[in-house]
Structure formats: structure tokens, C-alpha cells
Image 1 (spheres, rainbow, N blue to C red):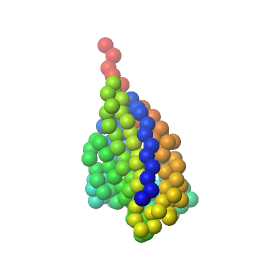
Image 2: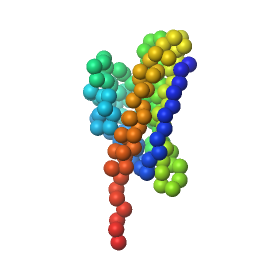
Image 3: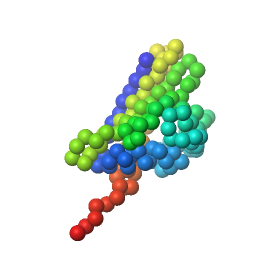
Length: 146
């Protein structure tokens, strides 16, 4: 198995991050690698996301798990490997949250293909997470002034 994980800290609450995740059509607003995206079904286990990265063929992601507002897991079955990405957000105190993307590549060709596919797929995790956090912070309601 091949794996990688990246996290950012944000002042956005988990609910704000979840709202952005659940609005799949809006992902290109904070994920610069997406040319087109479509959700088939609900943003819940069993839903499917058809995502087209710029200059590439569409990739079908199956939502394997979704627990509002904490996490969702998507899987791409590429035949000889399965790419499973866990997207997690958790409150860490002081009004801050940690957002983590963890990718695991498993299957019969994981040892061979993981070191090639994994870095290519996850290379934008730092930028994507930073943009997601910034968008979640900007979408959070501002406290009322007295």
C-alpha cells in the first residue's frame, strides 16, 4: 500500500468546511485542478462524483462514507489499484479546526503504481487544502457587533 497525508489548520468551523464539500458543483472554486465535476445521487455513501481534472479523462469517485460534518471518503477503482481518499475535519480548540486529506492506494499493483500515481494525484493537496480553508473562513458568518 502507498499512502500520504496532508493537513492544514483553519479558523473555520467543521460545518463550514462540510458545506463546501457537500456542494460538489462548487469544488472548482477552491480546487484549481478541476475542469468539470458532477454529483450523481446524494452527497452520502453510495453517491458518485464524476470529476474531470484539467487535460485528463474523467474519473469516477464513489462516496464510500460520509459523516456530517466530520468526514467523507471517496474511492476510485482503477482496476489494479483502488485510490481511497479520506477528507476529515475536526475541531482542535480555540475556535480552530484541522482539515486533513489522507490518500491510500491499495490493490495488486499498489507497490508498483502507488509511488507513481500517488504523488501525481496528491501533489496539489497543500494548495487545495489552503484554498478550501480560506474559502471556508470567508464563508463563515461574521459575529454580530454590539
